[in-house]
Length: 374
Image 1: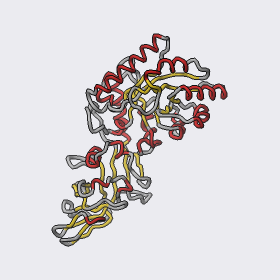
Image 2: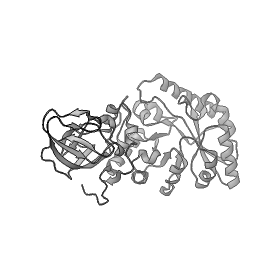
Image 3: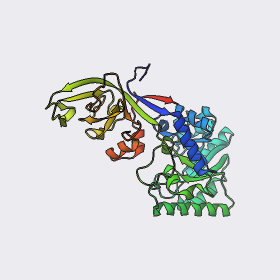
Image 4: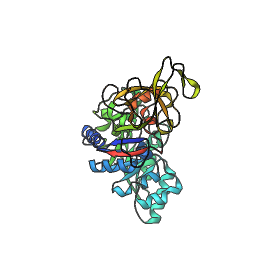
C-alpha cells in the first residue's frame, strides 16, 4: 500500500461504485428526484469527496443536519437543505447563504420570515411534519393550520413538505403504513385549501427498499444516505442492487512467533494453546475497529483470513497468522472490505457489535486517511 502521507490506516471510498449506487437508486425511484443525505461529514467518509462524486453523477440536491454542514456544500451549486432543526442564532447566516431551512414550529416560521424581510430576500423553506418519529417537527394533528398560517408570512418561499420514518426498515410495518396514511391525508387537506408544494417527500433509504408507495405520486423526491454507501439496515428487504463503497486498510507492523501458553492483549482474554505465528496490525478502536470484534472477527492478509486474537486496543490489533505464514511486516491488511466469501462487510461488524451499519460507518477516527479511488 503506497501512502505518501505516512498514515497507517486508510479508508478507501470507491468513487465509481458510489456513482453507480446513486444511479441505481435514481433509476429505481424515477421520476422521483434523489436528495443525497451527507450529514456528519457524509457519515464520516469525507463530505467534499463524496459530494463531488455525487455531483458528477447528477445528484440534484444535498441534505444535512445542521448549518455548518450546509455552508460547506454551497460551492457545488446545488440546493442544500437542513433536515433537522435550526436555532434562532443560525437563521440570519442561513438566510443570507440561501440554505433551505426546516420549519419545525410556528415560532421558527416567524423568525425565518422576519429575517427574510430584514434582508429583503426570499428564504426557501420546507415544513417538517412529525407523523410518529417523535423527535422534531410540527405535530401532524396541528400541521394543517400551522402550515396554512405560515405560508401567508412574508419573505417565505415554501417549496416543500416532508416527514420521517422511525421503523421503515421493518417490511410491512403497520406503524409505517399508518404514517403514510397520515401524511397523505394531510397533503390532501392542504390541497383542498389551495396549498401545494413543489417537493413532497417521506422516503428514506429504508423506505425505498421496503415501501415502494413512498416514491410514487404524490411523492416526488426521496432522501438517501446509507444506501449510497452500499449498506442496508440489518432488518428488512434489500430491493436495490447496490455495492459497498468502503475498504478499510492498514499495514502489518510486526510478525512474531509466540510460545504455547502466551497471553495476548489487555485483560489476557486469550491464551495460546500452541506455538503460534502472531501478527500485530496498525489499527485499533481509535480507527474504527469495534471492540466487539475482539476474539471474534478477522482481517485479510495476502487475501487470506486471519482471526483476531485478544482484545482490540486503541492503536493495534493482534491476529493469528497461521493462515498466512508468508506474511511480512509492511504487508497490506484489509480490515473491512475485500472480495470473496471471506470479505468483511459493514453489516458483519454491525452484527458482531449488536448495532446498525450507520454507527459502523460513522466510527472511523480522525487519523484515518480518506482516499477516493476509481
